[in-house]
Image (cartoon, rainbow, N blue to C red; front, top):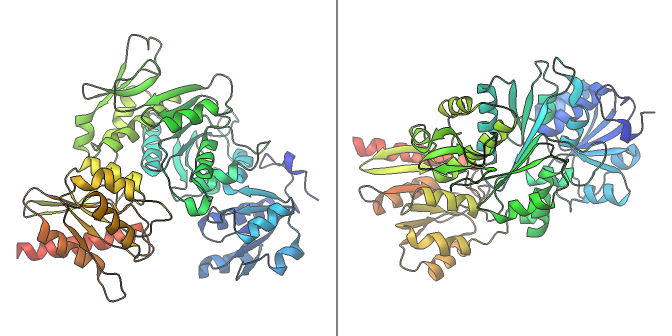
Length: 500
């Protein structure tokens, strides 16, 4: 018999014999199962599908596995009688197995809570585990997470990005090399699970940020209010710095309402002149007026917008990400000069306002990662007057406000995706003067080849063609990466032929 759940807050606690059902068998689910079997728990993994490799490895590590439909709690789960269910973030609140778990009062954790409970597997020289820094927001999470980790490393700390960025948190806490700080990107799904419990297993992060808030993942959460409430969990129990976006009032309200540790400070950022507890921009200089003694009358220079632009980081929303990351890094003692070094060595991930071609005076930009209206609006602000490639799976989000605000400024629009109707209707209503081209949806349609053909016919010298879909990709592509890669390939084919 294992220890009571409230006592399971250390790698060295007695986890042996704890019956845990793990939902999902991708990278996160496997990291959970692997951790728990190493701790001596009795583990049953349930998933509707899994890669051949993961399915083969589960018995090897000493766990049991059920692959099949989860429209209801399977007999294996009922007979197993779990004491804890640890769910991968893809399982929404309305999933039948999640409902079954909650109706029976079984403890329900996400992978982040489990990782926090065992974070002391590898400790620093002073015996303490790594500090945790949390990053969330509707957009900019991955870039800010990577920026903050890069700045921390430039400042001499052993730091790593993890979480929703692609490296499970449990893999980071079990890394034998050990870290001084983990920068944890958190999706709204992971935060929903963290919000279920507020006790001994709740994380106590050093510093936190919600970059922005706009409607997204409404089908998963059920409402905009539920999505907002999940995001707000990021600030809970923060010990040092709650970083918020001064240009987004929702993030300030989250900080004001958060239950934080006494002494935690609210640190604002935006592109304007910073106040005495903010980071901002003054005459093209990224300035810190938060982390210095004489912040009432002085500021510290971190970098310049011109320097960021030289490294492809000059778009306004990327500058905001840099300021947020700098606030997190400064809260952990990174010097201003090291912030600058970190920025100078940083490159954006692919499919984030990435220039993928130039020919005939036309620049082609891939921002396939702009999977919701808020992200697309930032892209269009960076490239006003672009030929806009837009559309895909809308995830229950209304795009009409985006098109009303940004559509009239587009040189032309090329509409893709299975849910084109709503996009076409919004252009007809809000931007009737803008030329709109439709790419048919079908198995035999090479979507991006047709996009590039139409864009090239509409483009003039000096134009930008911007892929900023404001929608998910799964109607026509495997992922946003696949969508961006196919766009870039079509651009290369076009520009190569143009040079011949």
